[in-house]
Image (cartoon, rainbow, N blue to C red; front, side):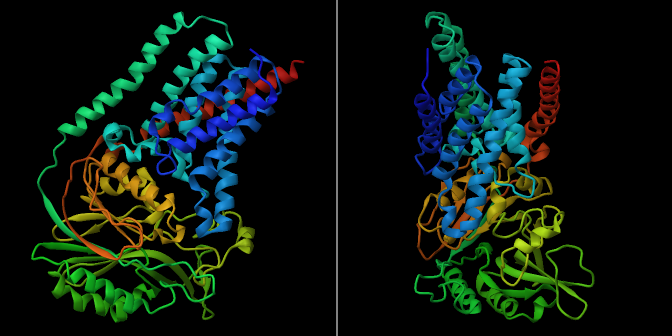
Length: 539
């Protein structure tokens, strides 16, 4: 079989389009994910068999993954054009490089080793992509199933990376049958064993999940919450008028949110949640008890059944020495560091802060600014900072008298291992506070909300989610989204969920799959380059 250049590019494009169509809310045709890789794999196999230069594989892979990135996350442009360009180009480059590495292993080590390498490299890449300066794990392939919670109840063991493994294995098995027929000239008849194996790989995990989904029962340990969606537009209008959210007094906004909550309060209300940066003006943490917001929240607690309060805030701390480039001089020998934080006030009035740990690259932080100081010269200005916000040194949780909970701020909710560590530290419920209004009425806020289902399943924890606008909702321990608000809807939700302190395999051990595959992939990649250079020097 001969493929023209145009046909190869058409197949690469088709792979990218299938990846877009299967992703949540850019198609949500989830079954397509099990065949989405096949056209690109076919192109790679053809290039290998024709002994074309390896660079062609990289070009075709870049096209596929560029379409995947643009088609699924184009809405990032609405929030930050610079961040969007960084995400599109860098993430595509990384994905294409990983696929190119698989091709090199297949070429210089062996065909079977190459197939194994694709699984190892890709899952290793997704794992490492969780925890470096330019992390962008939004497009982890296991996230595709966030709109199909009944399919992936076994994420409580594997996490989202298990979904990526499932996808790759089935794609590779189905591709092998096509490769055998069209490139090796074998008959369809002798492909039967491969079809049986592919069918088993699809049906067995799905069956296990469906049985688990319909038989799972939550232990009764009720917690009643009020979730506030204030519906304030953070974007600046085209006529340069101040934005609805950042152009008016945040204290008045918080007062309005409290009024929403008071309307929903009951004698059983345990906690009230307001979204990320519900109070956007700077709060000096050392002086919180003299702050107007603290006084307002404390005065409201008697009307809220003396419930715990979780409020998204912008905060800062003063330091004597500069320990990070995010600390800026105040002119008196001291340094100030800003945070995107969550404020907890317990029924006794004790205030506590936990700062956001996972920051959005290019928007909330400048990648590599600490290790490469010259990067700070390129930094964007954010709320008076030069290179972004400070972060917590590790995942933390809040403890109330009645329960423990994980505060998860916006972007942090797509990091499965991060949330699992919070649950490992004792969190009995996951509380997500976010501001998804930056993206407008696009697939972005819907995708983000759906990822809460993954965190619920992985840890068997209910999720309480308060969004500035978009989707404020409740997620049960099976991953079902309940009581969801609509876009641009001002509303407060009263909901009762069940606490859970039992650990899942995933919450106890985290991304074992990613750690192990990533470790092995490093050695296989090194071995590939040794074989490559050995072959080059032997000529």
